[in-house]
Length: 231
Image 1: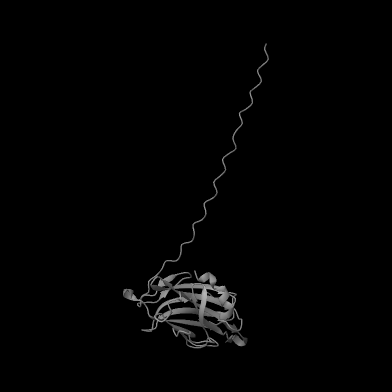
Image 2: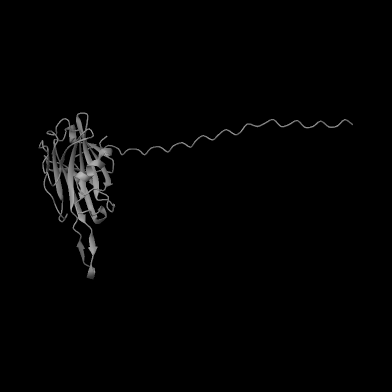
């Protein structure tokens, strides 16, 4: 018999096609912009924005940014407690684009143009209501000023881990009505907090809640860290 033919070599197989890369997760949605109403204050979340208009679309003219906080009580003997004095300072820094234009803080209670006024320093946070207040007349803010960043710093270097019930609130100064409130996160290991910014959007002013921690005991130390919030 004739020898069996040798089997023909198998055709080469092509390598499997590479798997497509996994789809990137969708970017988290930005918090929805909310509208102000004098019927009840709006509770803001981090990153949320509001246009500074009253009911009916009338632009706000003079606003008040109030800051309040309570020091955490430390347990003592016999079940008592005492508060650790925490000296927090509210400051407002004015910017023209990304250029620093002016600052209002405990060492300069009025902006050079007179549009922003600080009501004075509270050294402990004891008592009810706003501990420090900064008033802004939006009609007097110079045209070149594009944003005003509100910060809180701890003068003695204590961190926000020693602060409870901290908040900032937006008040319509002409009718003394609270329009929005942003509660600050407690327990953060920072000596400063970027609370919020008021900025121009076309012909309107808007407020954005921020709530990010920084390490700064006063406005001068905070200034170099504010560039990310100016865009």
